[in-house]
Every structure is written in structure tokens, then in C-alpha cells.
Length: 81
Image (tube, rainbow, N blue to C red):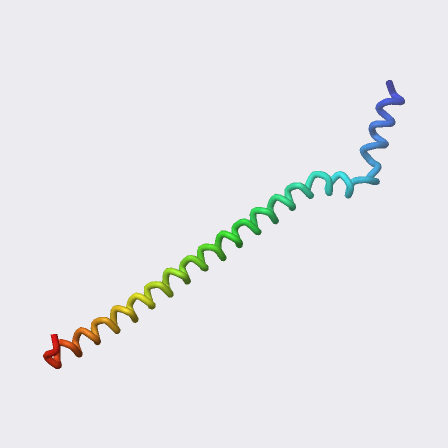
């Protein structure tokens, strides 16, 4: 029994391979965090792109409505309608 306990004490004092164990435990966590980061950045870019499209559509509609209103005003002011 003393031989087993001496062996276990020796294993605990031996630090070889500690980095490999730590990497095996932390690498999946690191990959998961990177994956979540990529997903969040993709979500943000997609949301920004959709907002830009909505803004451009609003500007185009305002411009088109402004042209229509100007044309209506010109027709109404010349009495041609």
C-alpha cells in the first residue's frame, strides 16, 4: 500500500503533461467562444445591411414622392388639369 501512495504522491508532484491536459480542457471552450463571436458579428453585419436597405428605400420613396408632389404642384399652378 505504501508503494501505491508513494506512486500517487510522485504523480502529483510531476508536472509533465500539464499543458496538454489544460489545452484539452480549454480548447473546446475557446473554439466555442470564437464561434459565438463570429455568429454575433455576422448577426450585427446582417442587421446593419438590412437597416441600410430600409434607409435607402425610405430615401428613394421620399425622393419619388417629392418629384410627384412637385409635378402635381406645377400642373395645379398652371391651370392645366
